Structures are given as C-alpha cells and as structure tokens.
Amino acid sequence: MKTQAILLASRPQGEPTAEQFQFETRETPALAAGQVLLKTRYVSVDPYMRGRMSAAKSYVAPFEVGQPIAGGVVAEVVESQSDDLAVGTTVVGNLPWQEFSVADAKTLNPVPVDKAPASYFLGLLGMPGLTAYFGLLDICQPKVGQTVVVSGAAGAVGLIVGQLAKIQGCRVVGTAGSDEKVAHLKALGFDEAINYKTTPDIAKALAAAAPNGVDCYFDNVGGAITDAVYDLLNKHARIALCGQISTYNATETPTGPRPEGKLLKTSTKLQGFIVSDYYSRWPEGVAKLTEWYAAGQLKGEETVTEGFDQIPAAFLGLFKGENTGKAVVKVA
Image (cartoon, rainbow, N blue to C red):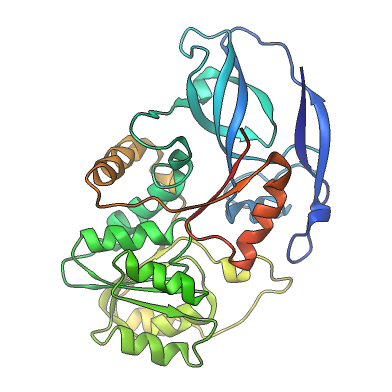
C-alpha cells in the first residue's frame, strides 16, 4: 500500500525552516515473518531531533538526507505476521514520519491504553518522563526542603521535573518564556516561576526566588540562565545537564563565563546524561511515573497539533516556544 512520508530534504544551517522537509508518497513493503503493519496515531516532535538533522558526530546517528525522519510514534497494528502483536494493539516505538509503516514486532512496546491516554506514552509516561525521572532522582537526588531550579520548565521534560521535585518535598523554581507559562507552572505547584523574556535581570530574579541558594539544577536550556544559576550554587550542589536548546541553532560556538571555578569551590557535581543511558531501568521509571499519575500527583501536559502535514510546523514551533508540555501531532 502507499503512504505519505516526510523526508529530510537538506541539512539546516542555523534554525531549521520548512525547506528542510519534503513530502513523498512511498510504497510500504510486504510483511515478513515477525513484522507488523502500523497506522500512525501520534507523532512526537522533540528538540533532540535538531541535532540529528546535522551531520556532526553525536550520541546517535544523524538523519539521512533523502530518507524519512524518525522518532517516537504511537501506532496501531492493522496487519500482523507476529505471534506477539495482534491486530488492534496500540504500540510505541521509534518509527519513521509516515502515515503507515512496517516494523519488526520485537522493536515495539504495547501501550496500556487503559491506564493513560495513548499520547502520554510519548510524554509523561514515555521518553520525556523517563528523562525527568532519572535526571532528577538519580543525578540530582533532591532532599526534602532543598531548592531545585528547572530551566525550560514549561517544556515536555521540565514540567515533569518540577512536579517530581514537589513530590520529593522541595522548593521548586522554574524559568519559562511567557506569562501564560509562568501562571501554568504556579498552578502545577511550582513555588516560583520567572518569565526570562521579560525579566530585565535574570540573575537578580533567580537570587530572589532562591534565597537559600540552589541545591539542584536541572538544565534544559544553557546560556544566560545557566550562567546565573552557577552563582547561586550551594555546597555539594548537583546539576543534571539534560539539554542546551538555547544553542542548538547557533552557527558559531557561543562563549560565556567559564563555570569550572564555581563548580570547584562549591564541590558541585555536574553530569550530562542521555535517557538511553538508563535503558535497563526504564521499566522501573515507567512503573513509578504511572503510580504517581494514577495517584493524581503527576499531571500530563500536552500541546497537540492535528494533521500529518502539520508535523514539520509542530517541530519548528519547539524553537519558538509554542508548546507547553509535550508537543505531539495527532495523525489518526
């Protein structure tokens, strides 16, 4: 059968544009033993994909020019040559941006749609939730009464980090890019939230929001916000380095304050991580996140765009701050 696919047309220089995406009609191959035909229901768009559009060496292979872009997808099995996945099963996996695709059943995980909306397995109960879980609890190890700062706090990962920190009994400060997002963070229980776009002195604002200093910093953004946090670090602070979205589209390597002296004087632990580092423990993370969600302690937040043809626009919107929580595209 034929399917629409979205290919990487060219590698971006600086911020990606619509020109980087090409729509193409493709033929899906016949099923082999152990394979399933999938109908895409939800597509995840994520900042890390910007790195894969570049040819630069990274922790994961780059997308190939002229081939479909791929990422987290929730799909429905519509034809099966597998004893493990029956027709009608909802699954999640790393799949191409296509309306229909063929995959090996062993590369997919069934989604328990009786426990949460299917799209949540791309967000709260998927990769972003696991990123928040392991980055905060394994690396930062927050203690009751300590102060946790989260940059990019209204994004897919940041919203979950803040809620998890409140479950741990912490004071939580978040930064975001609009007054609406700031209000949303406070509604979720953040103690303080700062609109970095309208705050004239981010360092002063952070100092006021964290009068007892910073014990844990979950860094999704980098740049000036991170520079300001370094001046507030307490002794034996912990930093989970998750993302640097402020620099993803930079055409030159930005320079700024060198933090090593501050980290040294405060005996701070700074650890970069990729959620796949914790792959063997993913079942543990999903189980705990599901438990807190079922108990009403965690809320899933999504910005849902509808239509397969809107996937590129939803992706580009990530770099303009258009999403609150997880950005997903509802295809079917």
